[in-house]
Amino acid sequence: LIELSCDHYIFSHSETIVLHEGGKSISITEKSPLRIKILGIAHHISQANPDLINTKQLAVLQGECQEAKTNAGGLNLLHNIMHNYSHSITAPHVIAAHDNFKPFIQALWHK
Image 1 (cartoon, rainbow, N blue to C red):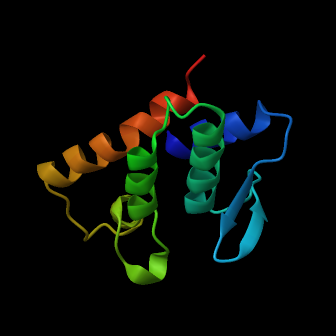
Image 2 (tube, one colour):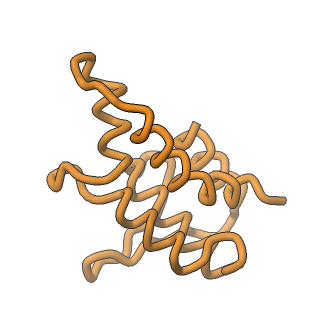
């Protein structure tokens, strides 16, 4: 759901969406890694309409979308659940992931 929503957002915006991270400028495309899509789009939405994704929500998304090598953040947890059958998740994990990604998904589909 998250990746398909990000791809829809990318396709429905004619301007280039760019993420500035670690001194680099990364153009966001449908082939970008999911964490890059989420962060780039979240920054894009936040700049255009801070009421949809505020500074606090943006910081939460940055915490959820840490690089895989840190093995932290909700996005890595979701990835492990999808691709590692032995990985288990608890109800609090699901609720936390939902609460942290909900503003982003709502902002993606805001009209």
